[in-house]
Image (cartoon, rainbow over all chains, first blue to last red; front, side):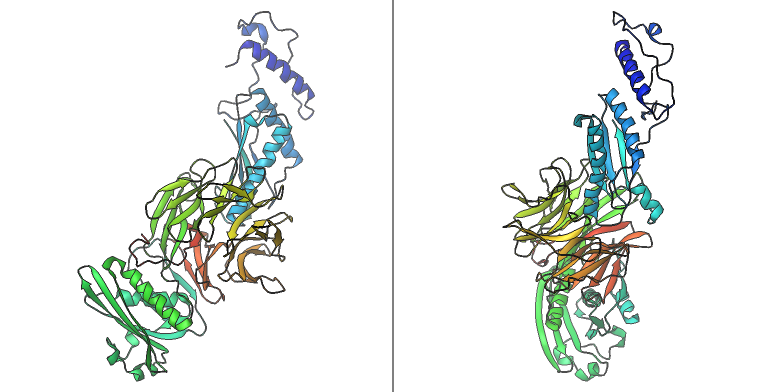
Length: 176
Length: 435
């Protein structure tokens, strides 16, 4: 639970950040010019609008547009490369993590079933590391991220064709 | 092929096994042998059936059906070679099963060369009743070696992972071992989390493997006799791909604690860890030992794609072994150290291939016709290898002879099987080995 003081500071920051996000069209939250002198909680003094939530009631991370942020990233065969779109999405996750330093994210790395099992364990880790590495460069401390590779052991789709394989070459962010 | 299939039926005793055997193809020119039903003090013909099935599975023999035999000698004096020459037999095996004392069997056998009309081998084996299958496999080993000159591997076991309800929330993973013929399967460890990479200690008493029971990959060594499990010290990142050294004192393994997956050796007594590969940002994994314990062969993508390399443990100098194809991984040496088998991708399809390390061309020769092949493991006599593959959407194990001629499959009726590891030679008849 946040105190009003912290909410105000967060709103200020959020407003500043949203104003800087060129990719969204949402109007920025109205920043408060001055904090009130006491920390007494008086919500009605602060804002007519509700606090922006970083997580919905199901615990899923919410982006600036109010939509749930996707937590799964997909990869090409044998690769651990993130696309520009992936990186933009990861920036939004980084924002959520920055605003919620008590939360952490576990990055799971996965592979499709082709190739050898142990190499795939390592490749899954490479994919998870690619994401953790980007979050780190976005200012998220190592205390807030952890990685685990499942290699090909935990397929999202147990099928044996390209449709299944494409779904299995993935990294997943698990928020805690 | 019909003979082979009927022999398969002769061999099955109706027990429900975790692994079945389905024979695909046999040798073009098998050795013809008559395994005459042994004389027994009870009604069962188990020993002869087990021996016949062992010989069939090697792919090098075509045992004669008992119904086609002209006589059923029980003693050497009853062997009339004409009865066997007429049927085109190369060899005849006869034997007897007696009770030496309560609960103890004495099995005697006599092997005859038909064209030469003489006995070439005879022996007597005494062991407790419950080791009946082990006695039969020992007889198979003996006659296989007598006839082919190669040590038999019928008294060996295979470890593997059985996955039930795969892809569901209640998937279960079991590390199991069974006889090389699929019989006497038993579960060593069961977990709702993945298990992989079983590796036998050279004396056959322990298995190292990777487990996700702590929520990430860690290595455990399990004693097969006592059941105790020892956790290898785990680090951040990967703890995987364990491999016992040939003298059993060290474990090769993969750790990524220093930034990327590298190969280390761990002294099992002193727990001293030694790093063996040093290529930054590459994946180095899947170590396997050279027989003299002074080199390790491993997979690395330091060149961009997975290839096989060898590192000298004294100098840490590394050289590349595979040069054809864009994916070569998970190598195993054949006994003798001159041949390598590995997973090889060709046209997007994963096969098992072998390569002559002494030859000049380094060209892989594909051994398997199945697809999505992985995890090859060689029998200790180097004559056969077992690997994992897919059959109609199911994970199965398959065995192929090193010359690629003989193939059989081991599916399981309960789930997907994978990650086979062929045991070293085992002394199944002494009371302290096997379980």
